Length: 504
Image 1: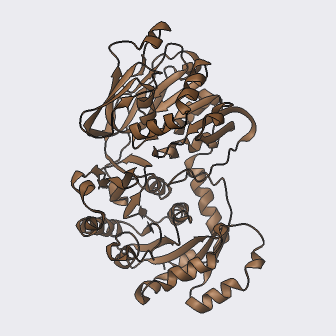
Image 2 (image 1 turned 120 degrees about the horizontal axis):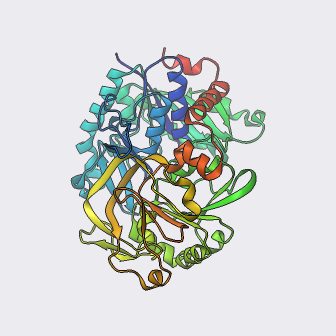
């Protein structure tokens, strides 16, 4: 079969491409169509472990202690695949760039780290990777009824036009019907739409089938005569005005855009997540935002954690750099005080590495440095990268985390570095009689003897309903209900029959 291609372009980053693509995946999948998402190149430190290739290489694991090795794609394409009722796999995001510094990114090609491309100049990569991207797109087009494609940034970034491999080059290759979405809440929406369209050559303008106004607040009647004038200038109609929707249930893809501290019902637990510059896998905390009685907030200063019950040190794409930033803000002392008061501290992946006593890097992968010393652990960075799904079982935990004792949990690992118990105790820890208690097998997790500090390599724990039930006595909406809600939303707000016309 040859798929119909629908592509979501944006006037800027953050315009709403990712969630709209997710909504379209579920919208078309609910019609009984075979649907797959695609994004040629994603730049994000939020990644998921997926099947290495082909829909038959499913990544699920079925027994305690089992492992399933795979590749990495952006989290947005992972959720889009689930919305499409498809098995997430590497062809859906063949090129992933994971920023480690302001001027450097790790390059992931078809799910695997590619050192040669990582070292290559930015503009030299495009022609080298385009054949791989085109093959992945062609295969998905051959195997599906509909492929929903997401662009990146803006298709009219004229400084990058010659090396484009993610926007209109993909649209032309797929003969895609394109939607151009803009964030009207920023202001200047009509100028953004017109300017983006005007900078495209005629053959690319012809692919734009509709404009979408996203994040609208107010009376839609006040938009007149803007839509009519824009259509006169471009020949393209505005096909949807989407009201602002704060809590649609999907995590932010690119960063901490939603900085508001929100909760459902009376606040029982305040959770402070340290938002360092190279934060990664922050999408795994979306479930916490949906738990009744939990207030989740992203923090960058010591004063912001004073009222917190929990402090979470999340994943990091550059552990030593984020640890140095954390110290520069004075957050190291604040986290230590929080732990000394017996309050909960959780480190995940890079956060676990920070909780230890030292980072040792003999291969120039991340960097050396002292840790926070809250767990007597040492991390050695290794050249090989661990990328795998895991299903495992907690051992006996004490203190604040005891509710997780003996619980089976599924998740994933994405990290450089191996962590182990220190051979000699840190004096302060020894004085307190602390040791590193292994709480997960295979060096996946430890806690201190007091029971309030927990470090895990396992991502995704809070996406397990059993874990949320154990910790909070509550459940959250399922992903399927979130996807259905997105599909219902666009069905309500798009022009009648427009979305169906795109695939006829």
